[in-house]
Amino acid sequence: MPYTLNDLVVDIKEILVNDQIQNGSDKICYFVSKALMDQNFIAENLPDRLNGELPRQILYEDNDTGFCVCGHVYDTEAIGTPHDHGPSWAIYGQASGETEMTDWEITNDISSDDIIYVKPKKTYTMKAGDVHFYDIGHVHSPVRKDPVRLLRVEGENLDNIKRSNIKVS
Ligand SMILES: [Fe+2]
Image 1 (cartoon, rainbow, N blue to C red):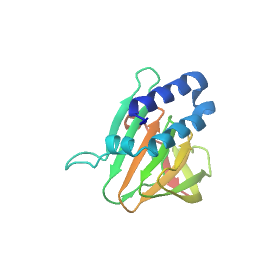
Image 2: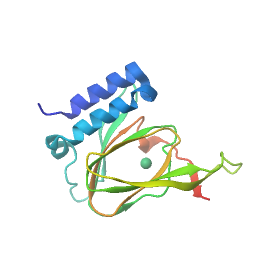
Image 3: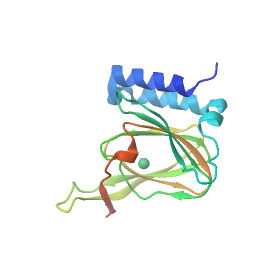
């Protein structure tokens, strides 16, 4: 049986309603990896971007709980600076290619000028099928040197959130 976007959405919503994210993140990661193992799911939901299309597409946004399922398809290098996701958590799933991800440790609480200082904590490679949960307040930076396809679940649409001002200490 193929695993569809609708299946994934139903599974995520059930977990969020019954367990909330703190108790349910591992279960959501399981279903994201299940989607990543289904080549039909990837072909259907993470296709090549046509000229002019954005790498990021919202595949589903839930009106009740606010969570989003997003597809990111980069056909060239994509280098991210250290960032958080404001008030949201996020689950990153690597569908194809590799991401070199660095997690950053916060070295101070928010200073009077609203800057959060960070230092690198660990760097690891996310390969096809790998899934990671990033809780609220977590700071990370992804580096993708070659084309990648990513499946992401966000606690709320990250297009609409205010991110913290983060500097490397
Ligand atoms: Fe991120």
